[in-house]
Image (cartoon, rainbow, N blue to C red; front, top):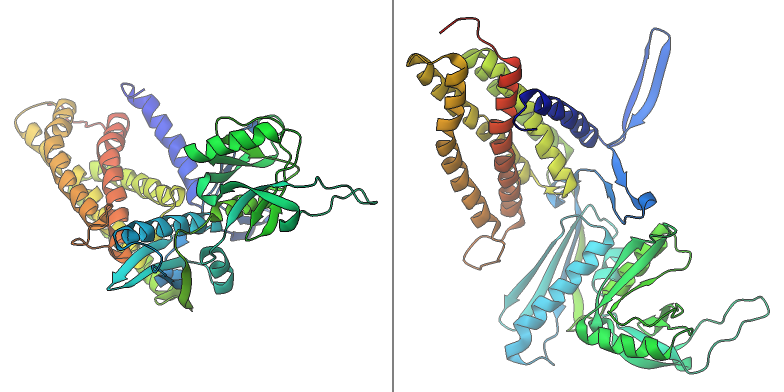
Length: 457
């Protein structure tokens, strides 16, 4: 494929069409009349749902804005370390942070900020949820000291006259000594046979042993699951589960299965936490700032495009086409991951636009040098790409390393850990990687297929 420029060109055109469908505005109204034909529709980005094929995968594409652009919820939790040894407190705080992150992810928030803060004997967890304005709902999920427990009936329930079973109570059941600490994860999945939503559960190695012993005794019987001493669900054990992995099924809707997975993942925090601050944050920059930022980026893109055409003619025009594809790819990646865009993140994206044409400038200047030495234009162009690669690679590697340092994935205290800095770093990092692809592969393919000089060398 890559050795055949025409086939690769067709593939890039189809790829660009798919990217346009992903990058479409969310719920954008289209209304017009032309030659007696009227259109009144609302367009939205495409979505992917493979549940019909027995694959538990669903993806919706949307743009996620940070607290500074869309507002959201800010919560500060204080961890009570009185019952924890001093040597274990940092680990306990980090464990609590991870559990809260897991709760937040199942809450449906994209790219939340969850970080720890320690000052003397004060241990705190700071949570920022972009786009979430219902503070109480967020607190009910994040801050609860939920105790998840698997139990068995002391006496099996009997059906009422209406045919319904009486709900289990804490008094009519006894503990199996399996709690949220032994549950590794729970997630929404789909049955490979019926395609119906279900909840897949996986236990830790220790929990798997306990669960295997319990299911061996309880085949054909119900196994109630309690959260904070309240019955959550009471599935029937169909078979022995010896590998620590099973599913909870039974006519769930997709939303019902998702909520159950969320509740199971609530688990138990290793330390008690209390809410000491909660507030809704309005968009500090707002729609006007977003519009101005996009406008600035668009003006910058136009200036770069005009410069490339003025400086390099047809080659510059092809580089501009590659730059458009660069923008489509980058924005699609932002939506796929998804990346929460703050104003600093948008700045990183705009900066990467300028860097995206650096590769083309180096290549085109090398091309001119080779032509001046008397080589035919098509040979000079191939040599230009080859000889410019070392400079392009080195320049972009240094930028990538800088982005990694700014993002600080290991949370080193001597490096920045601000969400705004990280937003800038991650968008610039993605932009640089995409620019390597478009600068070398896309521009080269466009030139091989669409460019030809009339002069003979």
